[in-house]
Length: 466
Image (cartoon, rainbow, N blue to C red; front, top):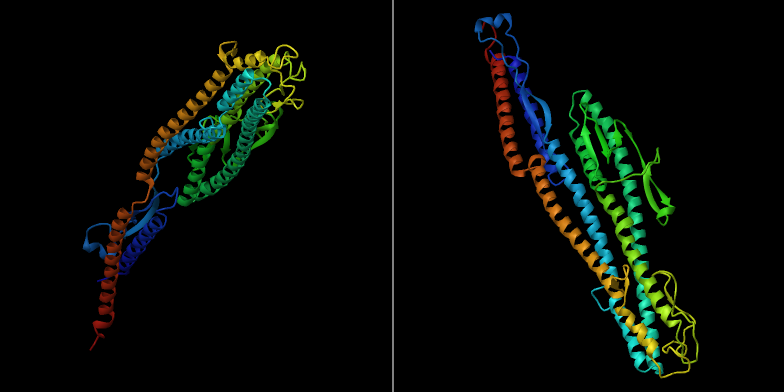
């Protein structure tokens, strides 16, 4: 005789496989959602029932009561996540450095006609031409023009480096704000996730959101994480705790007088200096505080030495009007470098003796400065010094680009490996959907059969006594 337990068994099967199909639908809907981890309904048999006393004669022992969804599994491996985040932070640092150094290289424009070496060569050449005809006002006007172009070239490069550092300063501030926002959200998710786990449920979508934030923190500052037994995650940066439990520490930026009033990153509570080992922030700080200042210092040293060498010679000479003791340049570095405002076509000194308009020996002395080894302790010329600096920058750019490319390949491979475990495969989901659909249809058919059997018993056996 059919029993209500059989109908309940069929109902359990319908509900379980319906829920399994809903999980598949959720997977398909998020197939292209960044950071989404595939889910799967884990089915298990329900608690079996003992046979009632009146059914003991049937035999067979305990009777199954059907199926239920035990949990919704989330596909994820912490080992893959850790490795992926580690290479992501290194890749982000290399990409950041490569991008900023590329901007610096473009701003210097040393491969084109506007390069500083080209301007310096034109400057030396103008002095050489003037030495052959020192009374020629056209040559003197050309020297003024070439000198102005050289000064502007120094000024422009120094200014562009300052602007580039200021831009990186703004990006540092933005990254710190993003770290604070992400850490606060992770602390909030820790509270929600631990609560859901404590009642025996699976906070899969909350875990996905937290993992996306952890990925971003590792990309920004090389953050590392460790998941505790209660589902909460501990996050640290460079060995310093950032998130623990439901609490998140904050970073802040303050002006640093020792570094041109650029922003210094520190922990808000303790005031301790913050150091990022990897990530975008590490790349930004490295370029802003080390690489660009080194280029600025080299440019300033070149400008100061060039001005000093030219002034030391020019101030001993005489102009066409007899003017002497006049500096050709003013300023102390590349940014403040200027032509002396007192310069005119008549008082440019080209002769070492007074009242000798046809004498151009001093102009030749200045022209020959291009061959004098006055930089790096007398080991390299002015042009050679800058050429070496630009070459080193080019090599730094090339190294950063190669490093970013190579690490990007590793990151891509790690991402694919991670995706193979956690990503949604639409073909696999379609196959599973068909499987659960057929099981659902079978359970529905069983319930229909039970319904027909009960109807036969109730309505088809007739009335007793007839």
